[in-house]
Figure 1 (cartoon, rainbow, N blue to C red):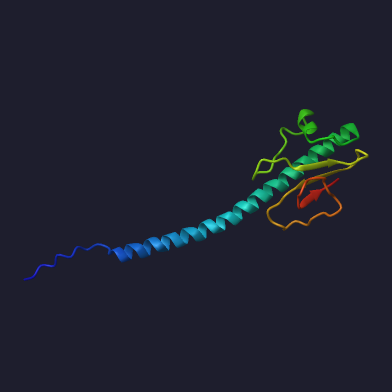
Figure 2 (cartoon, helix red, strand yellow):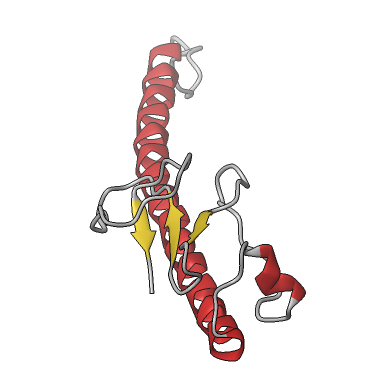
Length: 133
């Protein structure tokens, strides 16, 4: 009787195919996560802008004018800290109107879902989402 010396393991080809399939699946998952991260950062930007709008209106209700810079909101206690962009930690754009009765607040979104306001511009700031009172 002849004894079969072949062990019951996986061949090198089978292992390489499994590794290739796992690599392909992980790259698909990572690609879909990048889209979710982008949307998450944009959602945070919009929430930060809304929070700063509320603080600006609180400031205006007490002083009958908007502050010259957003740092005035934090020093006056209307907001805990000035929010920054979640991607690069840069400040959001802010410009005070010449009459101190209006402002323009902007952010650079990674997606172009929200409408772009063309009547609100900030000198030297390249954003694609702007709000005003």
